[in-house]
Length: 307
Image 1 (tube, rainbow, N blue to C red):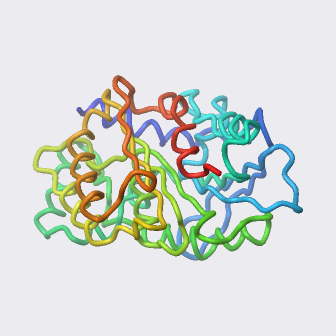
Image 2: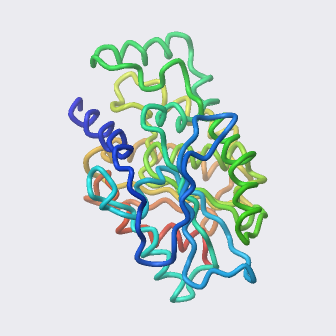
Image 3: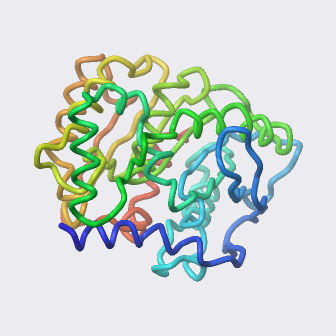
């Protein structure tokens, strides 16, 4: 499991080493370097515009986390990418989804865990639970993944109070909840779920791929999943006007998720989510990687953006 931990941290830590701007094979990319914020550390933001983008049309907006991993494998540490431009372009050309732009918000590697873990779930932990997390990290000779606690409330303030108004004033967007979505994988899946729970009037749908319910890298005496389930039970948005997509594979880090996803699914049913507004998919044999998420990206995009 320690090797998994090293791999997982490396997955995002080295992404920042690649400074060149991503290139896309479909649509165009607008790059905003070091977008400023009062709430979080400045970071890069990429905005993907589809072919034929026009100010005479209005577009839905999909906010995606880990923005440096979305478009161009030649700029990523592991030479993998989500292929967002190819998949979005293909679905739009086939007229299967509504007009949409994508906002790729880069992570800050050393802050990623703290910015993406749901803060109000962490606050449900006991003092002993928080100490256990700190002790567990020290036992692997690394700093606690969550440091002195999550920063996700400020990260969501950045998205909703600063970035969204900029996007809506700069591009030709539909600003309402029905046309504003959020998506990510792993820790990005957690923060996407947290976003729709904390800001149900802003986000109408969330896609959470390979949701990292474990929070850390093992399940033994791990207090985070119960805290996440407790938070979820009390904060899910209305099932009548929100869409939530979950999935996971069964290999590498995704092997931690099946039992936890079943707990989340039970809460979704308990809170009234039904087919059409919620789906959970399992992809047997798929691992925890951009390569895997790229292969199935069309599924959550169709779920969120179908006409």
